[in-house]
Image 1: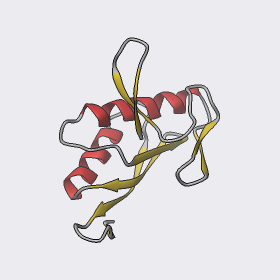
Image 2 (image 1 turned 180 degrees about the vertical axis):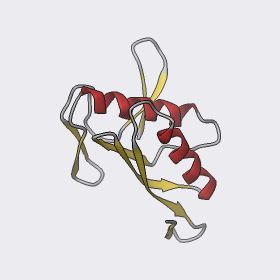
Image 3 (image 1 turned 45 degrees about the horizontal axis):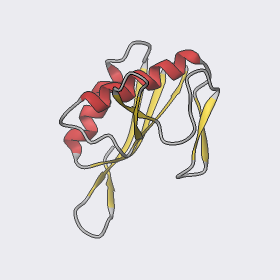
Image 4 (image 1 turned 120 degrees about the horizontal axis):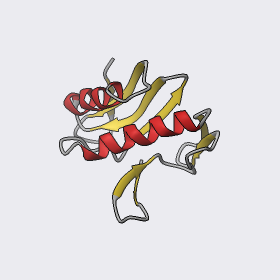
Length: 119
């Protein structure tokens, strides 16, 4: 996710890559993969989750990617610890239109940049 400023001066998180509401998807330039959102409704869900993650002061959402398909949200990327992983899932699950959350976030381990996956 990248931070952006709206035309009204508000700070918001936007999914990493090329995305605009109404697009059929966005391309994540960091991973060279396409993430399909499918419709305006999916784009609205992605934006709502992005905003919720950004508004949570106890969560660094800068490395979280969001994909939505048929109301199922897939969270990928990195978070600092298990508490952030859980908070991100909670933010997504409380969003209108979300039927299921697949939390694939990985937790950083201090040190050489290694990661630990928590299921």
